[in-house]
Image (cartoon, rainbow, N blue to C red; front, side, top):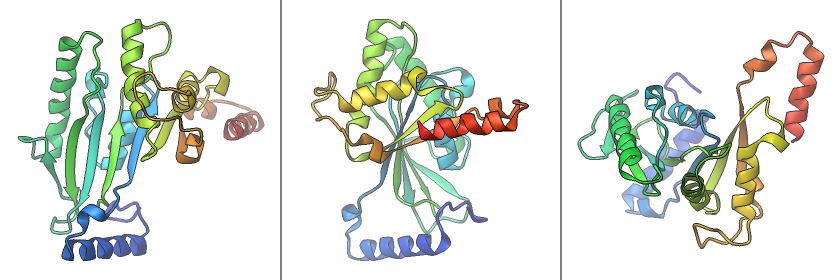
Length: 245
Protein backbone atom coordinates (compact mmCIF):
# COMPACT_ATOMS: atom_id res chain seq x y z
CA UNK A 1 0.00 0.00 0.00
CA UNK A 2 1.47 3.38 -0.97
CA UNK A 3 1.02 6.81 0.61
CA UNK A 4 -2.29 7.35 -1.18
CA UNK A 5 -3.77 4.19 0.27
CA UNK A 6 -3.67 2.35 -3.06
CA UNK A 7 -3.32 -1.38 -2.45
CA UNK A 8 -2.24 -2.22 -6.01
CA UNK A 9 1.30 -2.01 -7.29
CA UNK A 10 1.69 1.57 -8.69
CA UNK A 11 2.59 0.30 -12.17
CA UNK A 12 -0.39 -2.06 -12.22
CA UNK A 13 -2.69 0.70 -11.00
CA UNK A 14 -1.40 3.03 -13.74
CA UNK A 15 -2.04 0.33 -16.35
CA UNK A 16 -5.55 -0.12 -14.95
CA UNK A 17 -6.36 3.60 -15.13
CA UNK A 18 -5.07 3.74 -18.71
CA UNK A 19 -7.27 0.77 -19.67
CA UNK A 20 -10.25 2.46 -18.09
CA UNK A 21 -9.47 5.72 -19.92
CA UNK A 22 -9.41 3.91 -23.26
CA UNK A 23 -12.67 2.11 -22.45
CA UNK A 24 -14.27 5.44 -21.57
CA UNK A 25 -13.00 7.09 -24.76
CA UNK A 26 -14.60 4.39 -26.90
CA UNK A 27 -17.73 4.05 -24.70
CA UNK A 28 -16.85 0.51 -23.67
CA UNK A 29 -17.06 0.90 -19.89
CA UNK A 30 -19.83 -1.70 -19.68
CA UNK A 31 -17.56 -4.25 -21.37
CA UNK A 32 -15.08 -4.17 -18.48
CA UNK A 33 -15.95 -7.01 -16.11
CA UNK A 34 -16.04 -5.74 -12.53
CA UNK A 35 -14.45 -8.14 -9.99
CA UNK A 36 -17.02 -9.28 -7.43
CA UNK A 37 -16.30 -10.50 -3.91
CA UNK A 38 -18.65 -11.86 -1.25
CA UNK A 39 -17.52 -11.83 2.39
CA UNK A 40 -18.95 -14.68 4.49
CA UNK A 41 -18.53 -16.15 7.96
CA UNK A 42 -20.28 -16.82 11.22
CA UNK A 43 -22.05 -14.09 13.17
CA UNK A 44 -19.58 -11.61 14.72
CA UNK A 45 -16.68 -13.00 12.67
CA UNK A 46 -15.64 -9.48 11.69
CA UNK A 47 -16.97 -9.37 8.13
CA UNK A 48 -18.14 -5.77 8.23
CA UNK A 49 -14.80 -4.64 9.65
CA UNK A 50 -12.96 -6.37 6.80
CA UNK A 51 -15.20 -4.60 4.29
CA UNK A 52 -14.39 -1.34 6.04
CA UNK A 53 -10.69 -1.96 5.37
CA UNK A 54 -11.42 -2.32 1.66
CA UNK A 55 -13.36 0.95 1.64
CA UNK A 56 -10.63 2.76 3.63
CA UNK A 57 -12.95 4.77 5.84
CA UNK A 58 -15.05 3.96 8.94
CA UNK A 59 -18.48 2.73 7.88
CA UNK A 60 -19.23 -0.18 10.18
CA UNK A 61 -22.63 0.05 11.89
CA UNK A 62 -21.82 -2.98 14.04
CA UNK A 63 -20.58 -0.69 16.81
CA UNK A 64 -24.27 0.03 17.39
CA UNK A 65 -24.91 -3.68 18.10
CA UNK A 66 -26.95 -3.91 14.90
CA UNK A 67 -26.46 -7.12 12.89
CA UNK A 68 -26.30 -7.26 9.09
CA UNK A 69 -29.90 -7.96 8.12
CA UNK A 70 -29.58 -8.16 4.33
CA UNK A 71 -26.84 -8.21 1.70
CA UNK A 72 -25.06 -4.88 1.31
CA UNK A 73 -23.30 -4.32 -2.01
CA UNK A 74 -20.48 -1.78 -1.99
CA UNK A 75 -19.59 -0.87 -5.56
CA UNK A 76 -16.29 0.98 -5.71
CA UNK A 77 -15.90 3.16 -8.80
CA UNK A 78 -12.71 4.73 -10.10
CA UNK A 79 -13.09 8.49 -10.68
CA UNK A 80 -9.84 10.17 -11.71
CA UNK A 81 -11.35 13.67 -11.40
CA UNK A 82 -11.58 13.47 -7.60
CA UNK A 83 -8.80 14.79 -5.37
CA UNK A 84 -6.53 12.35 -3.55
CA UNK A 85 -8.24 10.97 -0.47
CA UNK A 86 -11.67 12.27 -1.54
CA UNK A 87 -14.54 9.79 -1.60
CA UNK A 88 -18.00 10.53 -2.97
CA UNK A 89 -21.14 8.50 -2.33
CA UNK A 90 -23.39 8.40 -5.42
CA UNK A 91 -25.85 5.80 -4.15
CA UNK A 92 -28.16 5.65 -2.19
CA UNK A 93 -29.83 8.99 -2.99
CA UNK A 94 -29.60 11.56 -0.26
CA UNK A 95 -26.34 10.23 1.18
CA UNK A 96 -23.37 12.14 -0.23
CA UNK A 97 -20.75 11.85 2.51
CA UNK A 98 -19.20 8.50 3.55
CA UNK A 99 -19.58 9.42 7.23
CA UNK A 100 -23.37 9.40 6.83
CA UNK A 101 -23.47 5.78 5.67
CA UNK A 102 -23.25 4.37 9.20
CA UNK A 103 -26.43 6.07 10.41
CA UNK A 104 -28.24 5.30 7.15
CA UNK A 105 -27.39 1.58 7.33
CA UNK A 106 -28.28 1.44 11.02
CA UNK A 107 -31.77 2.77 10.27
CA UNK A 108 -32.24 0.33 7.38
CA UNK A 109 -31.12 -2.68 9.45
CA UNK A 110 -33.44 -1.73 12.31
CA UNK A 111 -36.32 -1.42 9.85
CA UNK A 112 -35.74 -4.94 8.48
CA UNK A 113 -35.47 -6.38 12.00
CA UNK A 114 -38.83 -4.83 12.83
CA UNK A 115 -40.80 -5.30 9.60
CA UNK A 116 -39.73 -8.77 8.39
CA UNK A 117 -40.87 -11.85 10.30
CA UNK A 118 -37.50 -13.63 10.18
CA UNK A 119 -35.60 -10.40 10.77
CA UNK A 120 -33.70 -10.82 7.48
CA UNK A 121 -34.27 -9.88 3.83
CA UNK A 122 -32.72 -11.12 0.59
CA UNK A 123 -33.12 -7.68 -1.00
CA UNK A 124 -29.65 -6.29 -1.74
CA UNK A 125 -28.99 -2.75 -0.52
CA UNK A 126 -26.71 -1.04 -3.04
CA UNK A 127 -24.05 1.53 -2.19
CA UNK A 128 -21.83 3.19 -4.78
CA UNK A 129 -18.71 5.13 -3.84
CA UNK A 130 -16.26 6.95 -6.12
CA UNK A 131 -12.58 7.67 -5.51
CA UNK A 132 -9.47 8.28 -7.61
CA UNK A 133 -7.79 5.57 -5.51
CA UNK A 134 -10.34 2.82 -6.19
CA UNK A 135 -10.38 0.31 -8.99
CA UNK A 136 -13.83 -0.77 -10.18
CA UNK A 137 -14.76 -3.44 -7.68
CA UNK A 138 -17.83 -4.84 -5.92
CA UNK A 139 -17.86 -6.21 -2.36
CA UNK A 140 -20.97 -7.83 -0.90
CA UNK A 141 -21.34 -8.15 2.87
CA UNK A 142 -23.97 -10.76 3.78
CA UNK A 143 -25.55 -11.68 7.14
CA UNK A 144 -23.43 -13.93 9.33
CA UNK A 145 -24.20 -17.64 9.42
CA UNK A 146 -26.06 -18.44 12.63
CA UNK A 147 -24.63 -21.14 14.91
CA UNK A 148 -26.30 -23.02 17.75
CA UNK A 149 -30.04 -23.67 17.54
CA UNK A 150 -31.72 -20.64 15.98
CA UNK A 151 -35.31 -20.59 14.86
CA UNK A 152 -35.81 -22.50 11.61
CA UNK A 153 -37.04 -19.46 9.68
CA UNK A 154 -34.00 -17.44 10.76
CA UNK A 155 -31.53 -20.12 9.67
CA UNK A 156 -33.36 -20.61 6.37
CA UNK A 157 -33.44 -16.88 5.65
CA UNK A 158 -29.74 -16.35 6.35
CA UNK A 159 -28.51 -19.45 4.54
CA UNK A 160 -30.73 -18.68 1.57
CA UNK A 161 -29.11 -15.26 1.26
CA UNK A 162 -25.59 -16.66 1.55
CA UNK A 163 -26.28 -19.51 -0.88
CA UNK A 164 -27.37 -17.06 -3.55
CA UNK A 165 -23.86 -15.57 -3.63
CA UNK A 166 -21.50 -18.45 -2.86
CA UNK A 167 -23.01 -20.65 -5.59
CA UNK A 168 -22.71 -17.83 -8.11
CA UNK A 169 -19.50 -18.38 -10.15
CA UNK A 170 -19.18 -14.64 -10.74
CA UNK A 171 -18.28 -14.13 -7.08
CA UNK A 172 -15.00 -14.93 -5.41
CA UNK A 173 -15.49 -15.90 -1.76
CA UNK A 174 -13.70 -14.55 1.30
CA UNK A 175 -14.40 -16.68 4.38
CA UNK A 176 -13.62 -15.31 7.84
CA UNK A 177 -12.80 -17.93 10.46
CA UNK A 178 -11.44 -17.64 13.99
CA UNK A 179 -7.83 -18.82 14.10
CA UNK A 180 -8.33 -21.04 17.13
CA UNK A 181 -11.26 -22.88 15.57
CA UNK A 182 -10.54 -26.41 14.33
CA UNK A 183 -12.00 -27.21 10.93
CA UNK A 184 -14.33 -29.89 12.31
CA UNK A 185 -15.78 -27.26 14.67
CA UNK A 186 -15.88 -24.45 12.11
CA UNK A 187 -19.61 -24.33 11.48
CA UNK A 188 -19.34 -21.46 9.02
CA UNK A 189 -16.70 -23.14 6.84
CA UNK A 190 -18.55 -26.45 6.85
CA UNK A 191 -21.86 -24.81 5.98
CA UNK A 192 -20.30 -22.87 3.09
CA UNK A 193 -19.05 -26.18 1.69
CA UNK A 194 -22.53 -27.66 1.95
CA UNK A 195 -24.19 -24.63 0.36
CA UNK A 196 -21.72 -24.67 -2.55
CA UNK A 197 -21.72 -28.39 -3.27
CA UNK A 198 -25.27 -29.56 -2.51
CA UNK A 199 -26.76 -31.18 -5.65
CA UNK A 200 -29.69 -28.81 -5.47
CA UNK A 201 -29.94 -25.43 -3.79
CA UNK A 202 -32.86 -24.78 -1.48
CA UNK A 203 -33.07 -21.04 -2.16
CA UNK A 204 -31.64 -20.71 -5.66
CA UNK A 205 -31.70 -22.60 -8.95
CA UNK A 206 -27.95 -22.11 -9.44
CA UNK A 207 -26.10 -25.41 -10.05
CA UNK A 208 -23.55 -26.80 -7.57
CA UNK A 209 -20.12 -25.17 -7.42
CA UNK A 210 -17.79 -28.11 -6.71
CA UNK A 211 -14.65 -26.07 -7.46
CA UNK A 212 -15.55 -23.30 -5.00
CA UNK A 213 -12.28 -23.80 -3.06
CA UNK A 214 -10.39 -22.62 -6.15
CA UNK A 215 -12.24 -19.32 -5.84
CA UNK A 216 -12.11 -18.84 -2.08
CA UNK A 217 -9.59 -17.52 0.41
CA UNK A 218 -9.85 -17.92 4.19
CA UNK A 219 -8.97 -15.05 6.49
CA UNK A 220 -8.00 -16.25 9.96
CA UNK A 221 -9.06 -13.79 12.66
CA UNK A 222 -8.34 -13.39 16.39
CA UNK A 223 -4.68 -14.42 16.20
CA UNK A 224 -4.13 -12.67 19.53
CA UNK A 225 -4.98 -15.98 21.24
CA UNK A 226 -1.62 -17.32 20.04
CA UNK A 227 0.30 -14.32 21.33
CA UNK A 228 -0.50 -15.34 24.90
CA UNK A 229 0.99 -18.82 24.45
CA UNK A 230 4.28 -19.22 26.30
CA UNK A 231 5.58 -22.07 24.14
CA UNK A 232 6.47 -20.66 20.72
CA UNK A 233 6.95 -24.12 19.22
CA UNK A 234 3.42 -25.14 20.16
CA UNK A 235 2.03 -21.90 18.77
CA UNK A 236 3.86 -22.38 15.46
CA UNK A 237 2.62 -25.97 15.22
CA UNK A 238 -0.99 -24.91 15.79
CA UNK A 239 -0.66 -22.23 13.12
CA UNK A 240 0.85 -24.76 10.70
CA UNK A 241 -2.05 -27.14 11.37
CA UNK A 242 -4.49 -24.35 10.54
CA UNK A 243 -2.65 -23.62 7.31
CA UNK A 244 -2.86 -27.26 6.25
CA UNK A 245 -6.60 -27.37 6.95
